[in-house]
Length: 272
Image (cartoon, rainbow, N blue to C red; front, side, top):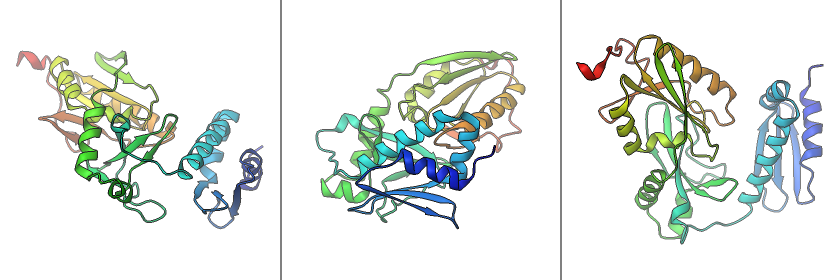
């Protein structure tokens, strides 16, 4: 039986019951909100999205949502500092359409990445992280440049553990530790240059959602199509989708593959 928004609302009310929180249901927007009674800070959940995941994955989808909401509410009810936590600052990749301001109107520190993606900066808090806004940085005397430099340094220290799969002579390497920064490995230029040097064909990269990055050694035209299918599949399944597009890495730049569709990898590139 198909679950309705009203039924999902009741499920979430039961799961997110807390004397210090209040919940509300917006029938017109089909959303469910949980917020702190005292501050009014909270999270708005789009019910159709939750229902879709519930119908696909069942109870684990609700368990996961409950964990994320509970942790997010805990974080937003505390004041966090940057000083002494330099090793806990990392870049995170988001879709280009991701809001540049918080719900309270605070500007988030960010950098341009590609036309499809933007880099934000986060303070790691263990189970989750908090995106750093300008007010937080100014309060502690940190410049945006310092935050970006520290995050750029730290992303290079993240381990890379890849699993390989070969399809039609193209090699695909998957990294997914689900540490919140899997897609951020695309910002590790030293890693990209290393892979570029080692790969036989072209280096293509996909970051369909926050918790996975795919490096592809594309040796023939079929490799592009296979990577595109993989990216679309992961994009649809991700908790925090980024982009279904893949990128070619050439001359230290990233270009969406659809723009360079006419460019096909040469056989045995290193012998040219």
